[in-house]
Image 1 (cartoon, one colour):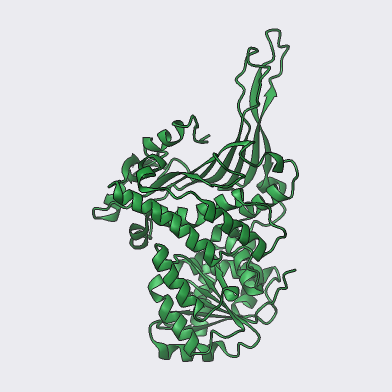
Image 2 (image 1 turned 180 degrees about the horizontal axis):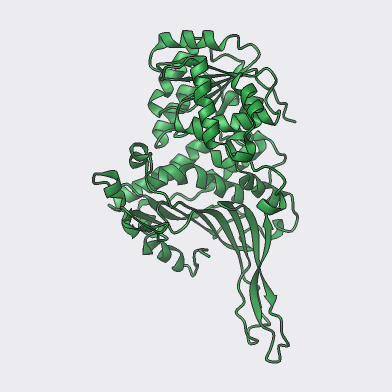
Amino acid sequence: MHVRTPVAKLLLFGATGDLAQRMLLPSLYGLHADGLLPDGLTITATARSEHSDASFRKFAKQALDEFLPADRKDEKAAKSFLERLQYQALDATDLAHYKQLAEKVGDVSGGLAIFLSTAPSLFEPVIRGLESAGLAGETVRIGLEKPLGYDLASSKEINDTVASAFPEERTFRIDHYLGKETVQNILALRFGNSFFEPVWNARGIDNVQITIAETVGLEERAAYYDGAGALRDMVANHMLQLLALIAMEPPARFDGTAIRDEKAKVFRSLRAIEPADAPQMSVTGQYAAGASGGEIVKGYIDELGKPSTTETFVAIKAHVDNWRWQGVPFYLRTGKRMTTRRSEIAIQFKPVPHSMFSNRGGLLQPNVLVIRLQPEEYVQLLVMAKEPGLDRDGIRLREVPLNLSLDSEFAGTRRRIAYERLLLDLIEGDQTLFVRRDEVEAQWSWIDAIRAGWVANDMKPKNYASGSWGPSAAIALTERDGVTWQDD
């Protein structure tokens, strides 16, 4: 049984950045307004910018005014939330500054949670600084926002640095997708209902498709994104975590150890894509000019302002080599400037072994379970049903959806920002929805092998028009197996 141990203090690095303004401060306000934060919890914010406590509170109030939905705004709640905040400017590379930070934070014997959202190059100086100032002891836990490296070697280096001050049980690696309600609903769907388990395997499932499609281009992320690309930015964390939740064995209990043990087994079972197989098992693309959202948009290179071979699209055919999933392809696809914004998992079941309707009109389609994560949140099961009518020429069948709309079913319940769940769990010490070191390193091993295959085969991204579903080669990736992407 997991025992929650809430901390008395929270230290927020990168507190003037975009993530803090859009997500972290509104999330902490939401938890405060709902009475979910410990009564005496103080929040110390830090960043390079100079602020007094009063000017940072004004800055935080502007962020709440801009990014909170209208129905969540409450002047009284905002006032009492802002009273929790204090600020200390910090040059993360200067050890002397951490003494001042520690003085501002104060006594940490009641527990301190640190949310670290900084550039990877600052991890080592920050960890050393926290240690030097006494902010890394047994009562302190740390949450790490990605990117946690760009390959296995750099990830190990970061993990080693963090582990020198914070053991695994006090380290919380954040993947914000795991904070999404619909992602957690995958666990409820699979392990809270008996009828899926008998067919949730290679005997019942033909293929699994995971799509994360974005309509945006570079926005403000050019410097980071061009050094990362779609494979590192999306597949190495969000998509592989979704794959693991679909593919994992039933955990014995709902806790951080049991769930992460099963996810780690999936990552160790991922079949490495050898260099010789990379051209057949993966597709890379880069968006060119086109139409998106009814507007003409530039291509990636024009938007970036310099030549680049960074991929903005990737599609991969993956396999999990274990008893449950042998022979079942997992198709992963993610890209920028695509037709529509969508994150979803489509699980296509095998067709019925014999159709008595084959000569009676209507094409019998295999059942598909669609789990939509965004922008809508729903679970949909596509089933065959009889079309109404007298059917004198035979029964006609048509595919119809059975819908569970989480948006409408739980319309009276506020939909929380993913970071609300994760910040609360960090404050309370529940690691269930955070990523363990062995998971991260197994993911990077698999990703590194793909990149090595691209280099060995001199694979350059294929152009695709903005507003499309990516390069035509991505269609061929599935159609070679007689499978069509779930694009409806």
